[in-house]
Every structure is written in structure tokens, then in C-alpha cells.
Image (cartoon, rainbow, N blue to C red; front, top):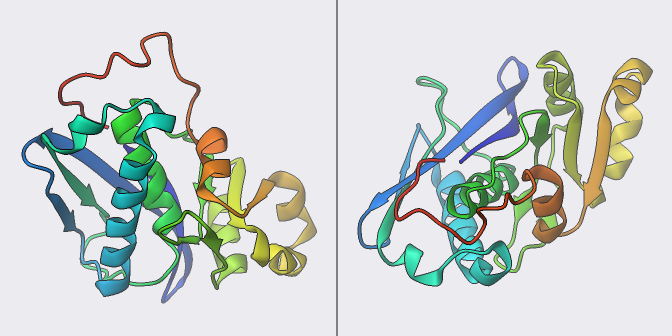
Length: 192
């Protein structure tokens, strides 16, 4: 349950690891990592969306009722609050519950609605430059941010694969590793 988000900080763009883990419990969601209200809402929306798509992801629906989820965005004491981490939170939770790892060479940005639509975000140039510096190969971006790619240096555009998406369902197939032969054999409680 780890996804690589892209963020804008006071000193430019940066990558942001979003971690999710689960443990026995009663369906509670815990959020940590100096998150502001907007990112807390993004995590709650991500959790609800993954629950609503349990069948599609091969997740036993009762798993949500007997496990607690903890989402953490480590980055020391740097406060994080912006409407662009929803997609990465979705992928971290989908990975956690489905048992399918998020590809390590994929970075992503975009806010998500409760119905799974991907909304455009700001700071695309800084975020993509951070992805390039970090050695990522693929960047998932909101389709409505396509025009922002024109601002990127040619060498960055040539080095990265950009996938423009409108809906979370498109990202699931792109960011998550393919299901293994043990799909459907969900552990009682697993760490992502």
C-alpha cells in the first residue's frame, strides 16, 4: 500500500510517498503526517471509493468492516495540504486491499471525486520535474492538465511517459501490478 504522489513545496516540486496499512479492527480510518483538512478529505474519499469498488478489485467487502486502515504521508514536519493527492491515496488503498503493489516507477497527481472523476490540479511543471529528478518513468496526470505539458523542457517530455486520465478506473490498470494467481485469496490482515 505505497503510492508515489507528486507535490509542490516551498522549494519546488517533490515526490511524496503515501503509505497505507491495515490491521484488525472495526473499519476505522486513521490519518497521520501533518495533513491539512483538504488531504484528510482526500483520504476519506479514497477509502470510500475503494470500498465502493470492492467487487471490481477482487476485495471481500467484509474486509472493510473487520480492519482498520492507517494512511501516513511521511515528510517530517512539513505540513501538507493541497487538493492533488487524492489519486495517489486511491492507489495506495487499492493496493493495500487488493494485494496488488503500485508500480514503483509511476508517479501521479490529481484530485478525485467521490464518483472517481479525476480533477485538474496546479503545479504540473514543478511536479513533473520532481518525477524526472526522482527517476520515475511514467506520470499519471488529469486529462484536463494536458495543456500544462507544453511548459515542460523537451528533454523531460521525451524522458517520461505521460498518461492523461479522466477516471480512477483508468489509473487502476496502469498503476497497479497485474493480479497474481493468488488473487481472491485475500489474507485476513495484510500490510501494503
